[in-house]
Length: 323
Image (cartoon, rainbow, N blue to C red; front, side, top):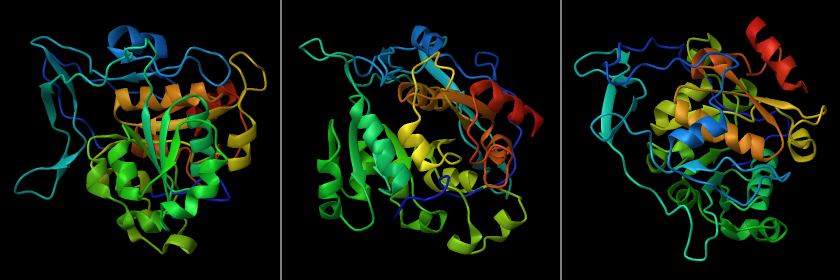
């Protein structure tokens, strides 16, 4: 499993599917292009672990929502990803409720702020760059490749912060957030079941000359990221797939810097999108929401007007809306 020299790579899948009507206690939420849940807004409505003491540039880090928003009756309400209805070939959105489960303590006994556990599968240029960024701001990182932890010893030794080399299965089990940064053609080699219901960041793209032809992707009836979501049954967010790894490594800037660049993201789960948006801000970039995973993801896949282009948040938002 290797990273990508060009803006990162992975798989496209089916077009956006309409959501079914939500129960009255749980209003449906439709993300629109350019609109992101603010870190402060999510922090106010969720019980969060604040994360490391500061982001890369001294800004308050986003942290992680260890508990879901509480609705009436003490449950959290959200929409499950598309599932196949019993006895039919149709996939449809099924609303459901489940009890809120508390996560890790927000602070340890010494008063230190909690951190997020991030598993990264794929130690190529994008994966290793993200590992360096996330470990550098205090998140616990478990990094894996296809050749075994022993082959990562030198890379891990050169990264400051809490990071260790593990197997792909261990990275998937370890992470509260799991980064998948491998070529689309290696999807079936991943520990798919270990990523179920987790926040998964898909950094990849579909390149048929490398990954082999997939008829559904070739005719644009679906997208690679939708395929990854279906395979992992995860809360998947597409991000870091349209940025060159050198730009990701070198061009992070403090908030308010006129040279600060933006990164497009897309996803159907609002909480997962908020988590990934916070991580992007923490490493010195502005997240811009392209929309749902299918329609939005198409706006920043290879061949789109924003793919591989360095843009500010305003410029990126304008291009996404015109795409």
